[in-house]
Image (cartoon, rainbow, N blue to C red; front, side, top):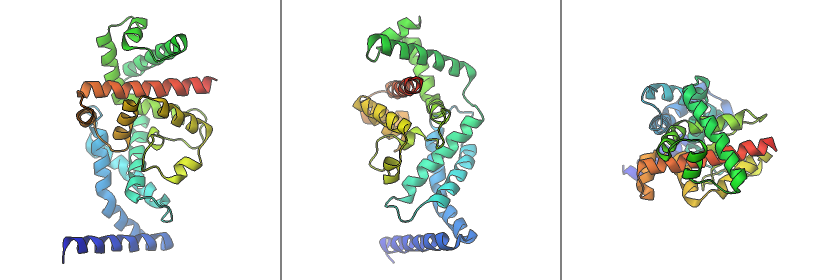
Length: 262
């Protein structure tokens, strides 16, 4: 039997299991789906792990991600023209992020620095009517550009958690992750049709970002690349890719905060 033939048989088998599971809600079918798609969990957990401090264990992230896989299996609609792997990776990553948020792994000192940076950045955007330069932002905060870039590094690591906090804690009945809103060829129709005002606003804010920042967000949240890999693609250092990512997060946080204040 050729490898192509074997692959087609495996795909047909898993398709049959999906149909059976959606009809009967069989535990055996569900367990078969979990086993078949479990490599997705390790893949996503590994990508998330690459952006986190070393004290966060990969095995813990895998455990958190399993809950996302279960949720994806239960909620996946076979009638949608979307690959399960694409749908599941977003849910798996969301489950990991939710758990990281709940254990509050981001140090208080980093949260405090992020809050300061948000405030100065938002004020300068209003005063200058444009995005402030690094030099202007550093001057307003009475720090050096090197210190600012160090803060960018910490924000880039913790920023996704902090941004998701904003999305989830402003009266949203249906919390959403930034990964659900980054423009992508893989976005499902349901994500673009049934969208709340705040989500529309964030999507608009993402589209207003410079092309390079949009690219970083897409590669980071959809292609699950780490900042070193993204840097190689863009032809910049990992440190520079980190700064681009942090600036994108900062701009989106500022836009969201301003939106809810208004």
